[in-house]
Length: 313
View 1 (spheres, rainbow, N blue to C red):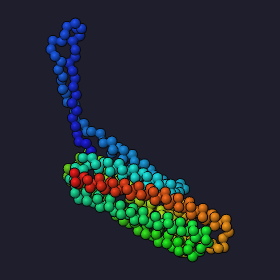
View 2: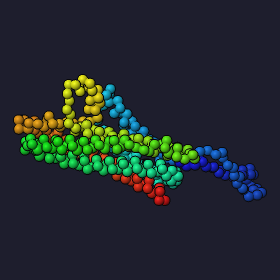
View 3: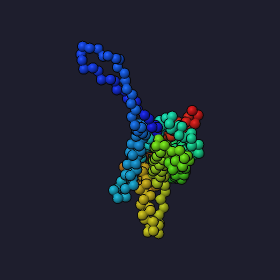
View 4: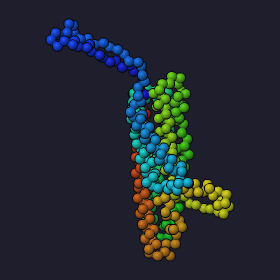
């Protein structure tokens, strides 16, 4: 996002070949100007493009899950959140560049839509943080209920967990309602430089990967904990759709369901111990996702602050 520059080079006079005689006149420098060449991209642009490329590779793994046997795990979700956090940290640095700030100030409508999209992301992750904390507390309550073989408490916890998962699923439509695109950036002004085009491309890609990772996160939790009720009719007509949606769940979060937790008083001690072990593993997975999403939440806030600073400077 740096404009065209001209380079100035200096070439001193060639010294006299004679060693003993001093030069007849002082050396002077001849200045010549090179042809005008566009500058290379700012290093931050190359850096964020590399990070975005890594995120796209991460997402392409899930795209081929039905044929390649890909499994969505909490580790996979956490990797995506970590990559997204890195993208927004670099994006925040790009927004602090004077060239970026000037370009955005010249496009007030686009500026406002980008602020709105970032606020929507922040709100969604803030709600998710509250819900994922409640899910972790719910799971801790289930561990106590398992040790006491309290079927009534387990049933109540499972119902509460499903309600929390449903609340998380409502975040997905909001995330997908983005307004910021690189085309909007380029069309709001007739003057468009190479730097503007680069910035527009970066902003569009950042919004795209943010939406994809967020949808994978929210849907992953929802499809892991939702209550599944099927009928033979649905099984015959919507088998492929059910298969895709089941695949959107997170593996570790799907290990404990209503069927495995029912009838605790009739289960053997070994069976209950296995269930308790699974709830401990589930808690670790929830903590891992909670930690990753919190880092994204903070990086989104920093990105929006950097964008607001562009308006005030």
